[in-house]
Amino acid sequence: MTEKVKNLIIRPPIVAVLGHVDHGKTSLLDFIRKTNFVAREAGGITQSIGAYEIIHNGKKITFIDTPGHEAFSKMRSRGAIAADLAILVVAADDGVKPQTKESIEILNSAKTPFVVAVNKIDKSNADIEKTINDLTANGVLLEGRGGNVSWQAISAKTGQGVDELLDLVLLAAEMENLTYNPDADAGGVIIEAKSDNRRGIVVSVIAENGILKIGDKIATFGAGGKIKILENFLGEKTAELRPSSPALIFRGRARRGYYFADSASSRNRRPGGWIFSDF
Ligand SMILES: Nc1nc2c(ncn2[C@@H]2O[C@H](COP(=O)(O)OP(=O)(O)OP(=O)(O)O)[C@@H](O)[C@H]2O)c(=O)[nH]1
Ligand SMILES: [Mg+2]
Image 1 (tube, rainbow, N blue to C red):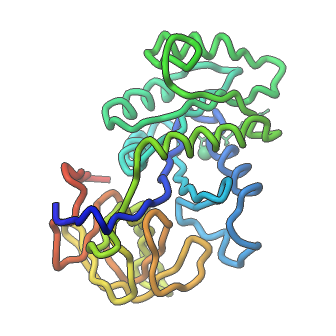
Image 2: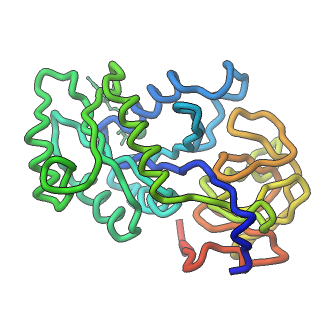
Image 3: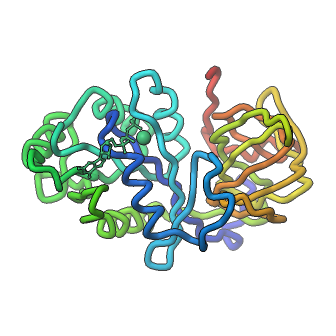
């Protein structure tokens, strides 16, 4: 590692939201975005970047959503690996289901720390105890129930418990001691890459190290390019972006799932970094 310890700066956590289909991942993210949004209503808010950041108690958190549908196993896996932490959403009216189990396996194999959100507690058929028992049966031992996995009962619909959940996320992030080196070449994870008729190749990324700047050369395996335009997740142009802020890069070329790094130095990948071979 070339990083000098004295240069390290704390960075916000990148959090993936995982769970079974329809258990409320997107609803939770929507509620959080509505109530903790960083900026005033910006024009670019509707653009799909696959990630956004919020501020809770004065601290930033970056979220990435993953679909629960069976066919999207790879996206869940990528999300869990890209993230520093995860929220495992389990609906209290449904309990642990196949993609909950799969998410648990992914989180365990990626060694991604996670907190549990027991969701939909506003529903009359919500059964928190059964959900907790289901989780226990699947090896997820919650705090106060024989284990040390933090959890919170929530409703993504009414917002009950969501603030407390975000407190748990920030606590978990503190334990991870997440930092970046501002002098290092930028490196991180690619969330999406698509070709836009008007603007060329558009890549959404989250840097985990270094600082992204216009003019930087970036590269992945098999693709590379120069950052012509850099935008934050609100679609506002910016000259540079720091970890863990979601960024949109134009005319870089990349395929999602790969790490990027200044092409001058491909050594900047996370130690023991990961590569996905197909999408
Ligand atoms: N009553 C109630 N309904 C909820 C709650 N959270 C989500 N829902 C509803 O559950 C349904 C599925 O919610 P989504 O947020 O789309 O679920 P998801 O996990 O993102 O689903 P996929 O992305 O398809 O895997 C929607 O109809 C939501 O309105 C909740 O806390 N209470
Ligand atoms: Mg969803």
